[in-house]
Image 1 (cartoon, rainbow, N blue to C red):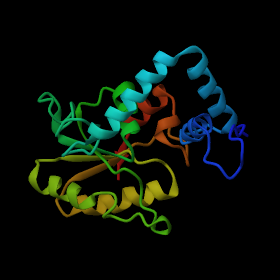
Image 2: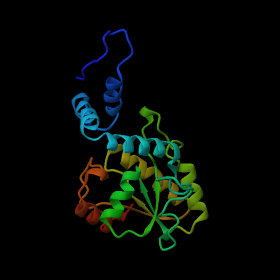
Image 3: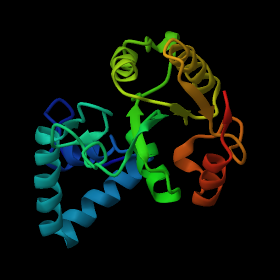
Image 4: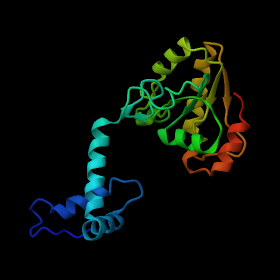
Length: 207
């Protein structure tokens, strides 16, 4: 638990408390870790702290989503979608931008992507609209796509999402494959080692 440096509990939090609380928004960072980070930045690396603040501020203001695949980029279209050497006949469906970089690092895939920014979860209010399936369908209707690679996570929600997208692909007579061998049931792509992902990708099956 972080120390409250304000003199009176009724007063506004001190700047240090506010910094510690802000750092807790990072995944896996609790009160103690946030406090250590804050102390490190203030005590040993104030220049680093300034650079971090500037980079975060600029990123939040300028980074949006690619107009095609929805990955994070400060441009209208990302570096993958503007690469003319990529195969427009293949689109890999993933849940998050992290998954794109995982696949790029682990495989020799040369097609395009579509990032769902989540998975179907009615209880959480996440439906087809939230996942951008209308935008995906527009791409399928305009491009000469021959294969959709379903690389959603091997969770219940991920499998349901893959099934819905495969049904969408059938409307346009597009073949769908699913990454398979090596992916643990209930596993998430982000946390699987590179060799396993490469094997799962190369051993994908018809879906």
